[in-house]
Length: 265
Length: 281
Ligand SMILES: Nc1ncnc2c1ncn2[C@@H]1O[C@H](COP(=O)(O)OP(=O)(O)OP(=O)(O)O)[C@@H](O)[C@H]1O
Ligand SMILES: [Mg+2]
Image 1 (cartoon, rainbow over the protein chains, first blue to last red):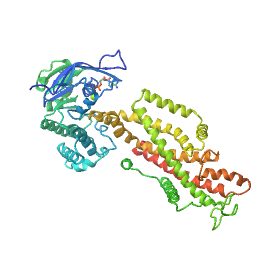
Image 2: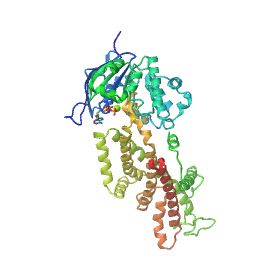
Image 3: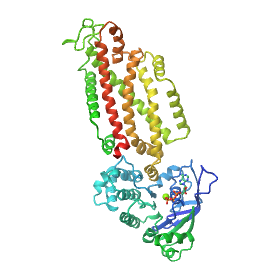
Image 4: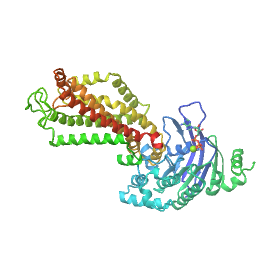
């Protein structure tokens, strides 16, 4: 029963363009338990986004060499599945929200079209059915007027609204795992709280495990169950959130904490 | 789709752009009238006297053979539109397809092949190439079209390639991949529609280029084989001008000038309205 939603072991990412350079992510491993929110924190450039993209299989082989002991999704290893089977998992069993909500939606299609096309693709829903589900989905991420949002184009929405459309899109197939890469960094504090509230509420409702990438320990304290600290492509500490704040083990963690609280560790 | 993109860009057309549009629409209606058989049908009959002056019977006068210059000039509108539409649609489509594949698979064999082909075609002097193809395919009524399409696509392909390379690094393409769309579908559904504004401008540019090229080729005897065109009229008029009769020459060149003016005004306005620097104002 207690098989994790996502198990990563010995994941390494190297650039093929600079063969001599050290790995950008080296031999990291972790379990993401079913339904939990696991935060991945670390300073800018430590490799958080590359970790996420490697798990999703989004790094082109021409530029990146990704090796993994295992990438297990609900117990099945998908590190060497053929591309077609991987595509069936992406957006369906595992999905991702990107750092930049301004450009993550296609400017030439309406938001409704983009969300419902995911449903039509993965669940084979008919047009009308997908439309109804999309509108329900938009409602669930907190839009009071889902019909209007359905018809809107991305440029007509604010950053927070777009990020909620992204959430609707990523969660529409009720994935087992969601990777949220700094979903709120580009938003102001109030909007950030609203978006994260919606996201975590939906995650609990669907039983989706969330890997929440952030550099904001305030966000971690408020939303995450456990937290991993990354430094230069290595996970240096994993802890329950309370313990991390009470007794940080690694100097890097203490430093991160000191930035947030303003206290000298 | 195109209308959505236009709406999204809040297209504001300038006064000169509007003038261009009116001129182009006027000529287009004329072409439709010829297609439908309502005008310009009497272009080949030589039933007038030679070099009649303009008047109520012969609006623009007659030519050397006693043919009605007005009828011929009007029928030529249809010829011009036929060539413009065929060449601009096909060359833009070809350029978009090859450019998109090259940009999507940049730095691969496919990309290299497309760039090499475009480079070779671009390095041949244009009229020499068109004349060579038209000459090689002589007798075929489509020789001129083929020659133009074979050279016009390269500019569109280069632009499409650059734009696709730019778009493919945008995050919505990554997010389409994260949703599980296969590569070719992302190209068709999310990348190409975002290049539509460039393709629209390229189509309008090649339309004008095709009409101009037709005139020159017809003048050289490599162009229109059956029917009549402004280029053929200008070719006829060389002898007439020497004899002091300018009606044929004036009719063909003024019509050509007006249509090109209209199209240039319109395509300038299009380019301005798609210019990101302008849009930001
Ligand atoms: N296209 C690339 N080519 C080469 N190196 C890259 C490329 N993209 C990122 N890197 C390197 O990979 C490292 C990790 O980048 P990554 O985007 O994963 O950082 P991050 O932890 O997500 O940072 P941030 O918090 O700023 O988003 C960076 O140090 C960067 O130098
Ligand atoms: Mg990042």
